[in-house]
Length: 458
Image (tube, rainbow, N blue to C red; front, side, top):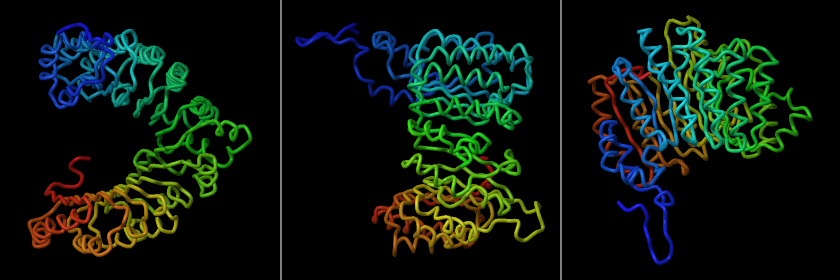
């Protein structure tokens, strides 16, 4: 292949050309096929210099790779790392302690390569809390130092994600500082899900320091975070002093993504964000959109009323109710779907909602959703994950044929634990006809029935 394209107009370097369609094919290939393809295209890739063929690289090492004398993934990294633009680093659990240390060795080497060879657009860290407690202090410090140096070497990161690494406070703050100081102008999307151990988030001074770093990012538009004291200190009305207001005036945050799982987060220690807090927040950030990802088992009403209040500009809600029969004998302990939807209406959640993903692990009357969905004037996407028998599915689709919510474009209905009974047979027989008729009206509907439990993939 020629090194240049020469024309009467000008000479064009391969690196000046746009990303080729080849990347779309490449993304669907297995790692072995990708390597074979790279051999075929080696001259092309060398000439191109920095193509988007390897836009996203996942640093994932499994036991079989960790057991090899020469790790094939590391060979690949040494050869092609200059092409990476997006990197995901994920630890896969293993019981073998010596393999954990092998993984740590490869991780430190990988971070060194990234620090010296390229400038990334995004990076994601996931699963580190699964091994941090099993390694010695020296190895832990080496990993933290490697991450610190790597993030400090980058200057164009737009998106960075930390998913439950559980660093110590000093290590976590140091890493966050290195990231934000070197990528202050470019960083637009930041995920801080349990960056440091929870006990360190209980101190007001620690929370204030983390907040001062995050609020100092002038280009940050999206903040994704667990419900924590950081959230409360950042947005509660008690923080709305003159200094805080001046900081907010120059910020462009438009998306907040909140996570809450009652298995890991105890609301007993929180004050809670009130409707007044959310009203103030909307005044500070007029274009603010909030996505909530809430998982509850048992879910006493106090949790729902604590988390979902009036004035929340909630545009997306992923709500999972994992019903457990033996948690309490009290009748009012458990949540019912009618009560939940009525609470949404009382809080006017329906005024903003554009996407609703609802997982309910005990049988419900699906037609109960009809009035609420009609009240959601902006709802574009609905996903339901339900258990058999989910009575009322036909009534729901009938209602859409008669009076379809104007904004609704997509609806995916998934029903689990289906039995070979009459209700399943009827639904399997008639749902294709309803789906076809609704598609003719412009509503994309899909109904899937599964024999497996709703917990099978969780």
